[in-house]
Image (cartoon, rainbow, N blue to C red):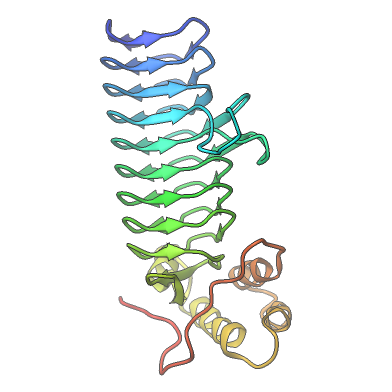
Length: 272
């Protein structure tokens, strides 16, 4: 049996799984679905057609669901689908999707969203992401698994952030960031590969060396970027991570690829 505080407002129609906890002064809307073991601390608002997966914890003053912050869209039918085992800290906001964007915002499993971070309408966020305090995602952002975003970073609408990328704190991201890439700066520049992240993922020394060689070839070789990416696919065909980077570069997108500055003595950074 769950624990429902007597001051909480749970509208008729809301679906609560087993062992759900709803704290003081929370508001849970009529279309909301809370999975087994979901915990809402005090003053949480969950509205609209919103689903929160099992064992997720939502902290005080978070606001989840409802219509997009989108002029001309009243939020009819807006959906927010949040996966299991997420930690959503204080004052986090996540909006439902827009009519133009397909109507749904998706957040994967096992994410960690620190205080005041924001996920806008129609974003599609992968599993095991980490947002530091104050991260802001504009609408329609696509983000792969395992991405880490530093505090106060802001990602422009329609950007793609590849798997296991690292976004530095206070970084504005107007472009697409390759898988396993590391970007920093007032306007993001590709600093190199997320070597620490690659090591934490258990990649062998040989694979990391190949990735560094492919990175240098793709971003500092001669000719067109797309042609270099196609050549990398052939040259390193047996390495999955290089294929992911090359496929990402070649995929259609509304944003350009985030590029490094002119070549210096190093082309990627290993701070280990």
